[in-house]
Length: 106
Image (cartoon, rainbow, N blue to C red; front, side):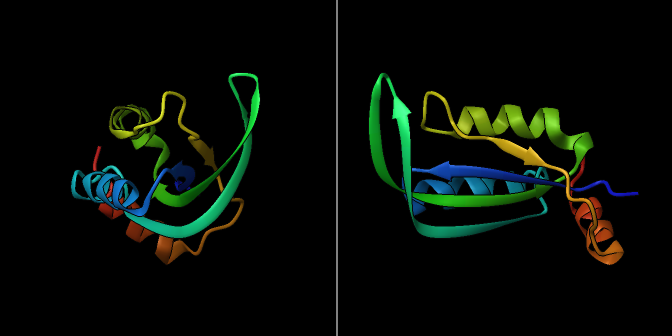
């Protein structure tokens, strides 16, 4: 059974992304977070097309933790409308999914 969620979330800078990732891993709502700095986002906000340098965070969590994870991420995030997109991978190595499940406590 695949009990892993991959959550994509962008942040305005590496410091805020790192701080948020650390809180969520320390509180055992995420097993792991990869931070990818220096992405460029182009989006529509309040009727205008905007361009921003951002950091992409890739969180690994579980479906069981999702309600608490999502709520806490919303609280910690500096944006009014943060990008929080959860994907359920079709295939995950059994050992990795097991490790992630052991790291995330709900």
